[in-house]
Image 1 (tube, rainbow, N blue to C red):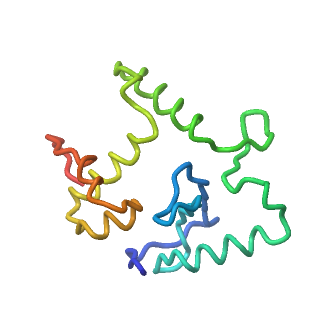
Image 2: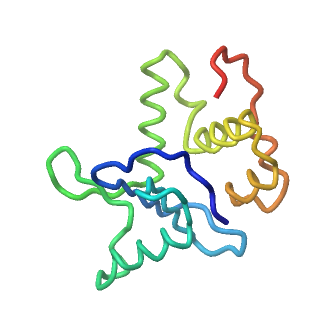
Length: 148
């Protein structure tokens, strides 16, 4: 599956982020997601997976892929707990009840934006790794004055 990207100049340094998902793929195996802003006009998950494999060549498998440099300059892992805490802190800052938000808020927001953008349901289902129509429960019809 290849998605065509608009022609924009590539960034000076390509940015890549890989997330070891807490969820599993459709076969029940743990999955890793690679998010990338490539310097070319096509976004290809197979190419990105091969580039990730090449970049990790020689590294022990127990080293997580989703690592960033923390406040003190030391490597830290991205975890579902850290993501949930960040989302809940953001909700608290804008006066929302943080207990209503978590990592599934990202799935709900993602599926809602894809739905509102007119992306077909099979693509949404594939992208979100849903084995059923459960993704439809995540869609939210918004009265947002700023369409995507």
